[in-house]
Structure formats: structure tokens, C-alpha cells
Image (cartoon, rainbow over all chains, first blue to last red; front, side):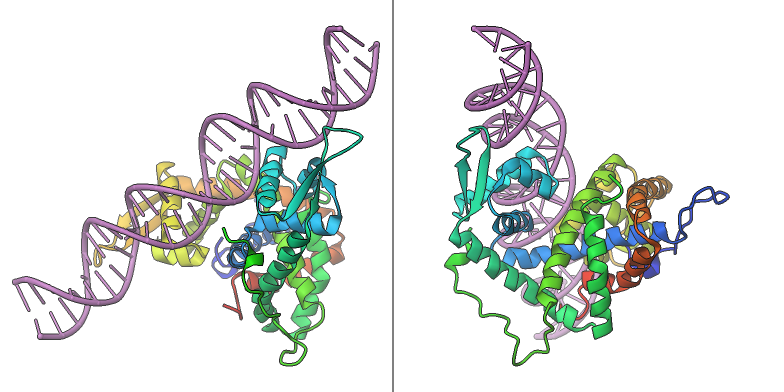
Length: 165
Length: 165
DNA sequence: ACTATTAGTTAGCTAAGGTAACTATCAACT
DNA sequence: AGTTGATAGTTACCTTAGCTAACTAATAGT
């Protein structure tokens, strides 16, 4: 995506106001999209440096903090299809970061929990990853950082699909 | 892949003494990361529906709005390595969405410009893609939307690596 | 017992990303 | 000149992530 400055501001869909759509909503959505792409690309490099690709780290994070989870729950949490989560877990398991356990009551379901090592790796990676952002965040003014902090819950709701799906 | 845990533990990016690192900065960075992952996963589905994967759409966008660009400029703008941008452009070219032109003065450099069809596809895709977000944004209160809009420039700076890289 | 449903897995594909090694061109200097 | 070095892209090859479709295994319901 182009830097905002090179892009036309709010290319309002033509037509005589047929929508209670706020001016700027489209522009807002577009820039959100763009920012997410670029942010993720940046962060992936740090994730790589920490030894785990971003999606694996993300899944591990859910497992560490969310306690033992079934694969289906994980897939839903991560918003991916079952085969995708299945492969992610295989990768994590091969590295000794998570453990599978077949549910005693229903032997179709597999529960996944983090190993101590998985927990440690997550925390290390987290620190490293975040350290890379700290300098960026540090370059912000206190006001800007506060702004970001306040907007983040909203962003999280959007990211998880609130309202739209 | 050598698991992170077998490597020497990184010293904490330690803060308390030498850094005015706010409490919460770590949490902020981590949640930003997570939100970006989830947002992008959501948006990719819309991108797919529009006929072009997200990175192609992103590159096309830069080309359409940024005028003719060299591949190197593009790679820098998209924050990817040359081979990656090269493949993206091949894909776009095969679909007739962009054109390559060898620079007259320096025949090593390749300039890429959007075809009319590329421009049209971009605009169509953009509207479709963004429409999915608009309903989510519409579910927000005006206050929340305003919050997001004000935080977005900050987010964009972070996403582009301001301050840190 | 048979059927339908549910949880995961396997197979096979596409796309994106990387590094390493290559070609081609240009610039510079002997 | 011609060689040397730097620069712009490309090619080859690998990994990861994501999908659908088709499969196995277990459970639930008649």
C-alpha cells in the first residue's frame, strides 16, 4: 500500500449520498489494511530472529495463556482452517514446545498444552520481538502512545471480526 | 531450525534504569502484533474474493498511485527483498495489470506502470475489500471510530518502522 | 448394527517470503 | 581500450502458511 500521502484522500464512491456511511470510513478502512500489512512485515523479521515464525508464535501464545485447548478451539481463535492449525501444532510439537493429549472422554478431540520449554520460548521471543518495537514506541510522544493504547481495544475488536462478519 | 531456547538467553531489553520505558509498552507492542496478525487474516479473505492476494494488491496500489516505479523502489516501499517484488510483478504482468519498461538511460533498471485494467481492478478490489471493514467500522460508536482515526497516523508510522529501524 | 456427525489428519495445491548465486549493465580507473 | 567493482534484477531452490477435498476415527442417534 502506498503511503497515505501519495494516495487520494477518501476516494468517495460516487453517487448522491445513498449511505449513512461516514465520510472517511472507507479511507480509514483502507489505511488500516495498509498499516496492518506493513506492521506485520516488520514484525515478522523480529519473529524470525526469535526462532519462530509469527503464526507459530501466535498459536503458542494462545496455548500458553489460554491453557489447554482443543485444536478446533485453536483454529477458531486463530481464525484459520483445521488443516492449518494442525500443521502449526505439528511444527510446535516437533520442537518440543507443546504437547498433544487425547481427551479421555471423547477420544476424537486432541488437547494441546504448552511445555515448560514452550512457555520459556514464548516469553523470550516476546521480549525480543517487543524490544524491536520499543524504540519505535519510544520515538512517540507520550500523547501519541496514549492515543495508541486507547485505540488498541477498538483495533482488537476489528481484528477479531466484530460487527462485520 | 535451532530452537530459540538452545540459544543464549537474550538479556532483557532492560529498562528500569537506563530507559524511560513506560510500563505497558511491552503489553502495547505485543497486542499490536497480535491485532495485526488477526486483522490481516480477516482481510485476506476479502482480498481473495476480489481476485488478487493481498501482497499483489498492495504492490499494485503503490504502482497505481505512485506512478511508474523501479523495482528497487517498489521493494523498498513494500519492505520486501528484490526477488519477492520481482515475482509479484511477474504475477501482475501476466494478468495484464502492469507493464514493465526498461529505462532508456540505464538499461539495468526496470520501470513498472499500471495498465488501465490494473487501475480498474485495483479500484474495484479496493472497494470490495474495504466494504468488509466498513461494516465492522460501522458497528463502532462514533467516538470509537474517531479514536481509531486519530490513532491511525501513529500506527502508520510504527508500521513503517519510524524511529526504530 | 447402521447411519450421520464431528474432530483431526493427509494429500496436493498456490502464494509469499527468504538466501545464494547468477546475468547484465554501468561506472571508474589503470 | 579493458578490467574491476558496484548496482538492478532474475533465477533456482527452499520454507512456511493458507486453502479445499478427501480421508480416518470416534461418537451419537436412531
